[in-house]
Length: 434
Image (cartoon, rainbow, N blue to C red; front, side):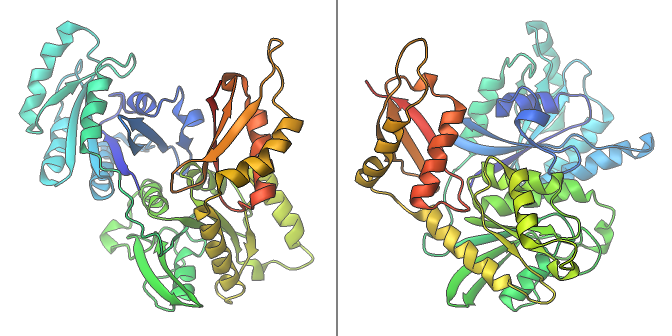
């Protein structure tokens, strides 16, 4: 599980630019995980051996300018509740504003680690202008130019020093997260599987508030269910559900080994569902897709084979996942979905001996080697599984830099055929070996 770093601040201070810099993406919408919420950006960053999640809290759309400040205060409060570390950005050229003061007042009351970052410090002359931000009482000011990357190394050093990457999941107790869009049946599934009405279930979309961990020792299994569910307070009815849900979804996924992704049978798989799926895939979690409300679909409208084929087509290239058709309200096949999740968990844990990998894989790769480049033949000589909580494999080759993505997918497909990684994302790395 990695820490969550939220970037907050008023508009036009460079939050998205810093997000792109930290996640190494050229365009947040294309290269990072975007779209889990209306305009929310989610990505991963690694620095000095520390991995952490980054969320850009920009992207709100406002109808009236007079509620602008209120909405920003709201997103700052969400970040305080959900993030482990907060990066508070200000604009060194604009200087200290009343809205900056308001945000700082909220942050001072929190117990979270705050990094105050003055952006657009692209010349030495502007560095001196950062002095006024010390009035905010948030400690040291990091002067950066997010667009060029100046100063971001020092910021990343400081962030990495505060991040502790630790695995909190016991090896012998699988954690299963229930994820999906609002009102798709997540809380009802939690209640049905646990037998305890721990989640308040209402017909209103977005009624969930707190992540719930429920230990279940029945059906012949012992596991933890992680749900993004809980009771929303009446005073919070007007919260931005989408901003809130991405933070909860990220948290639930990162706490899990396997994700049960629920989609609505009536609505079908849409872009939001695919974005949530990619979120779990990028975090290397096992995935079981459950098509809920199947009892509302008549046999004349759709059949399971057609729907499953359509779903897997949309999920390519990673479509080797279990698809279970369920009805939570009727308690149809929900235990089959749980059984699939446990099986995916076991597959995700499997450790393949090096001798077996080389004996079964190398002949296939030698008979169909990577395409030659510039008249040079590429040969894979050795393969081994790396130490990690998810399946990672190193393939040693004479010219690994010339092996393209298409061949990597070919290797992954052969591995799935040989070793059954259904529902499990796997990582393949090509390394140099003379």
